Image (cartoon, rainbow, N blue to C red):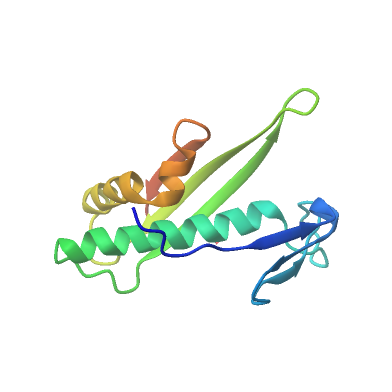
Length: 139
């Protein structure tokens, strides 16, 4: 394989600090997950954003190769953080996929194929639970 891109992001202060990319395009304050409107973003939101975008691109590629239109399609990622005993933390992901003009079965078939090629799906396979669902993404 040929490397096509490397992202470089530095974290300072962990969940109570910030993250900044080497090119300065990403520069965000971080906080603990919270329902408070004044809190900053958190790692789970950043992971959800990356996963949703990557999965959506994989879905669109699969659809394009099959001649299927994806105008208006959406992928919403829900990333949940779980805590067990001590320092035992785990993630789980639900991907909600919607493709206007396709029924649930057709959308699920495209989503299942995208799940096989998406780099995020491949990287997390066997490590975190990922559920791929069809229908309107939750907001």
